[in-house]
Amino acid sequence: MAEKLLTYYDEAYKLGGLKARMRLAIKTKVPTPKAKEAPDTDENIAIFEKAFAEIKKEFN
Image 1 (cartoon, rainbow, N blue to C red):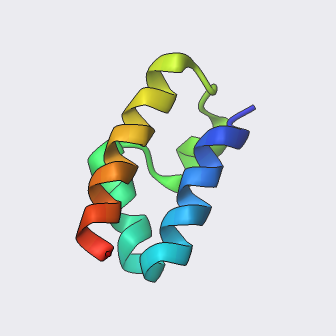
Image 2: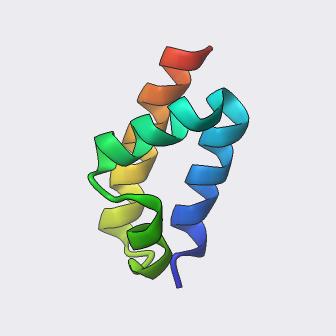
């Protein structure tokens, strides 16, 4: 459960450290502890994908 969502947090950290991870939490409205429990639904993955794309633009 939530394996895919957590990979977005890992990738964000690799990209920009804690600041990028915090931006992901703000943009998705799902902090890391809740992401561990949230299901990997298509809707959740789409939200994280969109937020991560924005973060990649910010930190690249």
